[in-house]
Image (cartoon, rainbow, N blue to C red; front, side, top):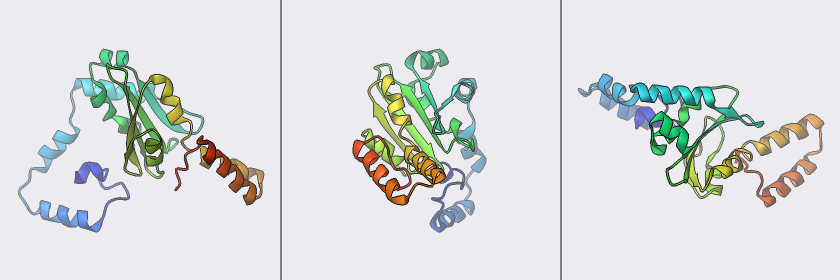
Length: 193
């Protein structure tokens, strides 16, 4: 958990307490190479799935990287939807896309949604669709592939509106009214809260 939950110490949740635990572990006779291999070594199938995700992802106009893995694609890749959903971070690390989302369809048609970000609150989006999780790592489930864009479109919407209003130099009062209208309609999730 120390390695994976901290993103190898690259996430903001790395704390002094975690480093104290790590200090204790370093003094023990743990085979760290064995742990690393277990976490990061994969087989040919895993490499091919990661390659597919990296090559086939799409992006929305609001800079969200996403991929939709339907059940036929998952079958052709020889993986199930739970395994595929765990590969969401194949989309991480691209500076153009501060948020990334992976959709994986089960055999029954249920869609597992994994949302990630390094700096924005994606938990609100997951909660809006009946899920939850951490501020920058959350998930939910939706009922069909047609709903995928309902998850992607609102993300970063409010930030984009604010950027446009700032460029247009529109008075802040108007900004607040517009934001309130959009929030009331449920079209925008404020990921900055």
